[in-house]
Image (cartoon, rainbow, N blue to C red; front, side):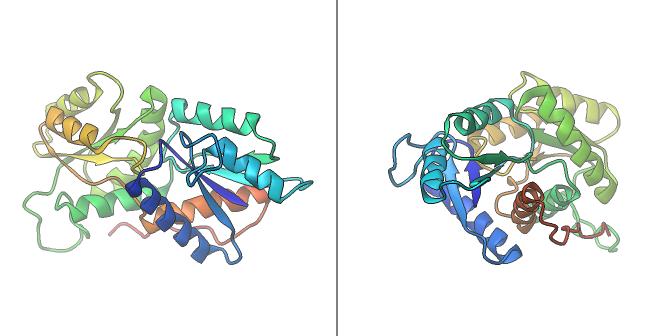
Length: 257
């Protein structure tokens, strides 16, 4: 059974996003029985049980199974505080659980970031075309959460994004004081005149206001978080299948144009 571990507490927006992600995952693997659990949800068995409570439910439904659940964190990168709570919930549960890696870095995340930037008018959807986008950025700040470790991991995806857009990309952590402003200064010092903030985040990890504040700090516009982009659901099912030793077709990133 796939258990999608969603950061934070259950909100309507986070639940809707998670449901779209598991819907994509179902389309990738027939017969999938996914569950959604919020890392900071209720400890009891209410409408939105927390991760440990959900795992205990799964253990009761599947007694004696060698692996009763595969937990996939809905995280683009290694956010230590969230992963610590996920590991604790797994350790405290009665289930036999396999915990997977987070979703990134991965070329599919670079593809999704490119799409979100183009939707915001901050990058050309196809840089080979002859028309231009007046607001297209010539420098990208890749925003993440989780401190330096998360920024380093996002930097790998940033290199892939830079190859797609042919512009410099610097990763910086929203939760590291001054990191976004420093990245903006570094990009401008290297010649970038129009910057954009691209959240390398699924969505529930961070309050939307924090992204607006970070964009203002950098003096630039920003794209939306990745959200339920199809690549996110594909990466979830890839992590799940790998944990179980299944070999589904590997998701492929669309080639940069």
